[in-house]
Image (cartoon, rainbow, N blue to C red; front, side):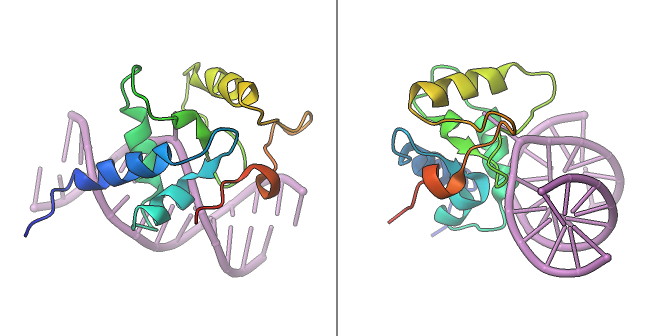
Length: 108
DNA sequence: GTTATGACCCAAA
DNA sequence: GTTTGGGCCATAA
């Protein structure tokens, strides 16, 4: 039977919800967990379209460089960093970067 | 139907 | 360690 296209979006959101508190995941990681390793960009596209009242922990998704992806003119980056710090994720003082070897979520 | 864009990733230089 | 270029594919116009 046919699979709806927006099912990919549901898969992605489902994986983002699995990220434990105090951990982070990369876009590529989420895409791979959703079964589409080449669709890292779509993860970002889905997160951008999220409503503010969503229960999805979008702030726990960062890029492979361990940094918050810049969205061009938005203030969401600062909110994201504040949320992560409130969960115990610390940024490197000089690089503004998260140590993925410590904080990256290891999916079972 | 085509073209442009993007909260990305990776290998090579 | 950093910078560059190519690729990938869903969404919007």
